[in-house]
Each structure stands twice: as C-alpha cells, then as structure tokens.
Length: 125
Image (cartoon, rainbow, N blue to C red):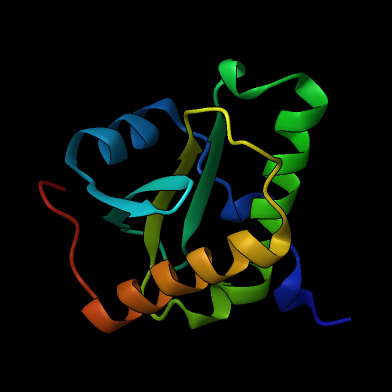
C-alpha cells in the first residue's frame, strides 16, 4: 500500500493558534452538508481539521462522520497542488448519516477549486 494514502499526524491541523487563524482569515466554502474554511499555509503540505458539533448526534455518529470525511480526504488529497490549512465542519444534524458516496464528490470539488486557484501566499504571515 502506498504511503501517500495514509493520514499521518503531519496532515492534522492541531495548533490552537493555527486553527484560530484559519477561522479568522480563511475563506468560507459551502459543500452541501459540510462547510469549510481554507487558508493558504506556510508549510509544505496541506493540513486538515475535521469538526462535528455535539448537536449533530451521539459520539458514535460523530465519529462515523469524521471517519467518512477522513477517507474522502485520503482519496483526493493528491489533487491539492498547493498547501492549505483546511477546517471542515458540520454544524447541523443531517437527516441521515453522510456516506462516502455523498461526501467524496464534495471534498473532490473543494480540492479542485483550491487547485484551480493556484498557489497563494498566506496573508498577514
């Protein structure tokens, strides 16, 4: 199995300071049931944060949503040509739990949109 399809720790957006910067300066994208904030990153690789509010459902439901989103990211992150910090979040309770077949096209469309925008420099850094 190729290592480029994993989800290593380096791909996770973990710093409170970096997360705050994405929410403060990032660009908003609506992706069907998901929302995203993106900000050009200073690092060499894109980093991701997946957040699901408690009102979405029980812990197993929230964990399943995160797993599905992580899998969609894993499948399509090679499409990103420039590094971005990306926060993906779900705020409202969906009628049914998202499946990979519904989330994957949304993630793919976002990554294509970001790749088409080309490499950018982070603002204010």
